[in-house]
Length: 337
Ligand code: CP
Ligand code: NVA
Image (cartoon, rainbow, N blue to C red; front, side, top):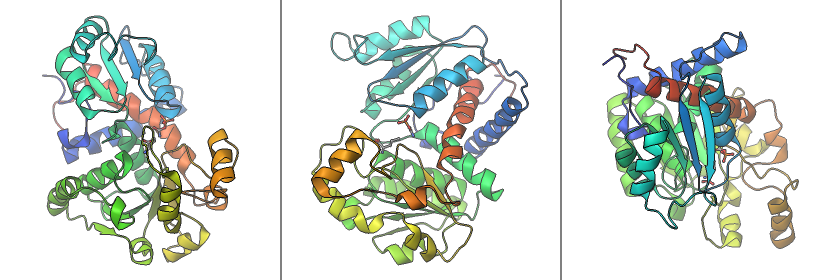
């Protein structure tokens, strides 16, 4: 065994240890430095990478594509309408075929079970590029961004506002707890994390000393925060009454007043993107017509403020996905973390 990571999949954060996540974050920072200095890092020379997407993507797809190419690998996009998966061929059969031709597989889709089965049957590393439950590759980029800004993770307070039951809230709560970050989930009672996710986070928080808070009280939740984080109010594939969601989540919108409520002039704003911060998209124009709302989870002013870090965070998706792929597929000498 040359590496604690070799041959492993990244399906959810809970399958890794605190030290392993920290290693991936630091390796991401190292690869970012190499990229900026133009130093080659072709750890996956000659490898083939399958990119399976059941849901749309800009960042994750672009990051896996450019990261693969920088690492010397060949990425191949396989969209849901291009392949037989689910319609004419089972996950098990598809996994066996892909595993015989590709060296690694990225999957973005609905069901966590599908990504777990792809890993089980393909025999190659599988990386979860987002499911309804978790968004683990986003976590390495996000906590890398936090570390870049504050020089540390332990003791930082990250407050997530919005739909507290979605993949982002789940991943932030659990990963933050593993890393010693205090995570506040500020959401209406009906949109707070499931008991199962809360229990998992509480188990880690006990080990690392994270002080978590799950609340519907915005003032109490944001006070003292180093990071305010938000995500779309309706996730991909969710079938909900949008008017109801808008009404429920409006008090949790990130705006300049909320930023002041942290009492901390250095608070940064993060967002996994895409964001509804203006009416420059088809969907936003529709929401404006139907609900009279021009901005949803974050105002344009907050989005463009000096506190905002969402575009650095987006760039970090590439560096961190590179680290994840190189560590799990690159035959690197990492005997311990
Ligand atoms: N943050 C994120 O996953 O973005 P995409 O949906 O564009 O991949
Ligand atoms: N919660 C969002 C995250 C997008 C990156 C979604 O699943 O659509």
